[in-house]
Length: 332
Image (cartoon, rainbow, N blue to C red; front, side, top):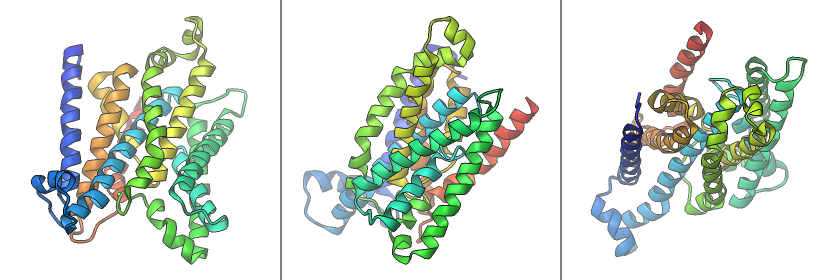
């Protein structure tokens, strides 16, 4: 663990270096390897060549989407674990990813939605709707919101929306072709317009997450303690909920329902820097991007020359980690 402020700053800087290296490698490596000089020349001396077009229309948007989606899911997972006091809380486990994907599938199948801005709006709406349903179901009963109940509610919503989405996809051929790459979780085949549609909302959410970090530290002490110290916990939870919806909905709108990033990174971050959200949030944003960039690069080579969806790679990494966290929590 990084105990001192100086070590935490150094660790964050190293994470940023890894992040930049991941971005460069994501642009450079794949079925067609591209040199650093070619990457630079594609923007400074563009000549319309195939390699220059690959850099501008495929590789750079793909790297940006992986970085933003990974960071967004990681920060959303950290906030969810904080407000629910549940170590396995994440957008994928609590059904938020599945709900956002369901709204995209439904909009495409029944309302003819096809534009990137429409998909982004549907993803945000689906994330918000699912989060509200899970919160209501997890709060029913005299004991109020508990980690067990909200986890069960999230698992139920995940199964429910995933089944409905698959049913719609299997009965609509055109819909299947249009949104399959969203549903499996992938950053391939995207253009820059998809990224620019969701990036402003996610950027605001990243800033908002850091702003409420100090309040999240108080909330982590327990709701009674936070209230006694003068905190309006309901407003902090509401703000965190809005930020989670923006980050998770934005991530799904650009990359599909990618799982486990929101579980893996917050736990690694807390191991490195402790529970102070003023450090947890920036570390999650950086390391989440690093993880998804690395998973995307790996997905290009695991079945070379074909590519595996990045959602499959994160599942391969995430399932053992999830089992470990669940067993550790059970022992605790």
